[in-house]
Length: 430
Image (tube, rainbow, N blue to C red; front, side, top):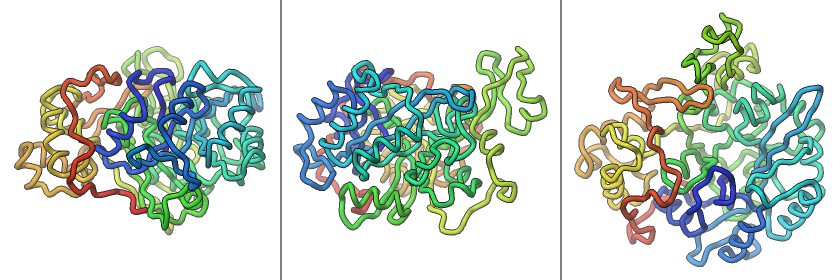
C-alpha cells in the first residue's frame, strides 16, 4: 500500500502495472497500492490498465487487485523550524483522485515527480482532503525517518497532535518505515489507539523490494471500505511483515563519511557529536524512539491487544548472503526460481516451507538460514546515516545492498511464471 511508479525519482524505468502484478504474485502479496496517482502520465496508465467495479478496488484484466494510493511530500516552516513530512494518501475511486489532483494542482506542479512537494502544513492538507471526500485516508509515511517524516529527528514533531493539530483525529494509522518496527512504536502511549502498519515503499518490482514490508488483513470482503475500516478501528489487522529495523538505513546514530556509528546510549555520552569531524551526527530512529518513549515503557514493553509482527530478510537476500553473491546474480536467481516453483511464492518459502524440503532444492546452509530468518536468529550490524545495516550470516558480515539493482533491464534470467497452477497460499484472507 506504499509503492511508486516509474515517474517517481530514483525508480526503475521498467515499472509498470504488468510487472507489479507479476512480481506481487511471485512474492505472495495479494493487494497493491497503485502508487503516484497524482502524476498525469502514470494516471493515464492506471486508467488504461485498471478497471473500477464500485468496491474501491481496481482490477487488472486478470483480476489482480490494486488500491488508489500516492505519497505526498509536505515541506514548510512551523514554530521557526523547517518541517518535511511525507504522507501516504489512499483514495476510494478515480473521481476522488481527480478532485485531489485538482486541489494539489492549484498549489504546485504535479508532472515533475510521482511524489510531488507542496508547501502545505499537515493540518491544512488533511482538512482539505477530508473536505473533498471523507473516505480519503491519510497515513504518515515511514514515520521515524530522520529527514522526511512525522517523528524525524531533523524536521519532525514530538507528537501526532503537534504535527496535525485538530486534524489528528483523522489520523488512524502510521507506517513504521524500514528502521523501526511495532515494538519500538509500542513504547509511545500516544500511539496506543493508532494502527501500526508496514508497507514496502518500493522503487522497483524486484522481490527484495516489493513486499519487503507488508500488512496482513483478514476482511469479510475485499473492498476499499473494509480495508480502511480496519485501519480506522484496528479490527481486521492480523499482523505485519517487517524489515529488520537494524537493516534499515537510519536505525543507529552516526556519520557515514566519518565511518562512525553509535547506539543511542553511546551517542548520548558524547552529546551526539561525531568524534572525527566534531559535528552533530545524524540521529537515528532508535535514538529518536528513546527521546519520545514514555518513561514507564522500557525496551520490551508490549501493550495489551498489540498486533503481532514478524521480521523477515527477503529470500533473495538470504540466498545471496549464504552464497556470498550479488543479490541479482544468475546463481541466486536459479535457486530462487526453483524454490518459487516448488512452494508457490516467496512468503510461503520464508514462513512455512519445511527446512528439509527447502534443503532438497537449495542446499542445507540456505535452508538453515531461511529458518534462522523466520525465527529471528540472524544478528545485524545496524544501519546508520543512510547506510543499510548488514546481517551476520554465521558471523560473517554481508553487504546485501552493494550490488543492488533497481533497473528492470538488469534481469539476467526469466522469473517463474506468475500463472502457475500450483496453489498460492495467500497471506491475506479476504
